[in-house]
Image (cartoon, rainbow, N blue to C red):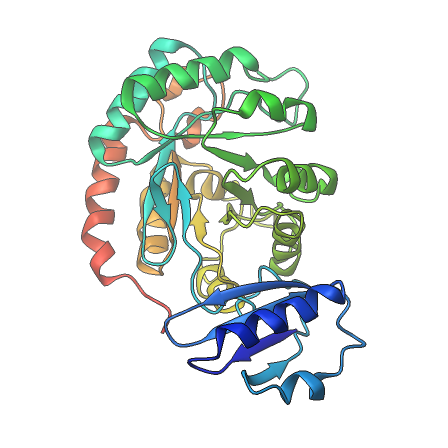
Length: 337
């Protein structure tokens, strides 16, 4: 349920309303925007007398939310959310590019790539320490040692780290990680989502599952937010369809659709979406033009010899050219009215 407050509502009466809601086991979330202030009510509101709330002098209107996701709903939070990733803000007009290799392989590899992508304009660094792979015989990542290498690259460049969490028991190892990535295969690992929500307030980059609907993606975000962590970013990385010309199928209309449904930032992953390095640039440009809040791009200094996903990884030179074209598009990007 959403309670819209009148302009210049008496603060004392608003506090009384919040206390009244809490006494009924309703969690009120106050969102103050440029145009209005709303109270999003989370809990069992089915038995609440809307007429009683509507009659209060500080209340402009009351409406029930029909969608199953509440905290992630734009009705709940009309203004765009801005997620602070160790100083790099994403959302609300703030645009960031996350870049780096699929897998951390060595100190020299990670530090070198981090320096090159930073020089081209990347503002956050990605790299997989724990890797979910389809084949048990594929490279599974360096694990804890991979996280240590990422931290070394962060010390060398100052770039915040984005890396994937695969299991609850690994969470204590992520204390110095800046953004926790939840991969497509774990999008509906609800125990993991609840743990990330309740045990950490770190920003979470939540990737859409390969067969997930947008409502299912938003419901997964809801698990994290309902558990106490509001710092969620939605990541579109393409879905599995009948098409085989690309690794996955990406529909960039998810950007305006998600921005209508939700206040959360939307990040596009053109590397996993296409599966081919030469397709990354046009998809990145399209996503930028359509109003994405950020991009996550795989970059490797030697793609033919990469231990993971070399085919879809741009070289540092390709990435530099892509960043120039993205910078030219940014001033003309679509913005939600």
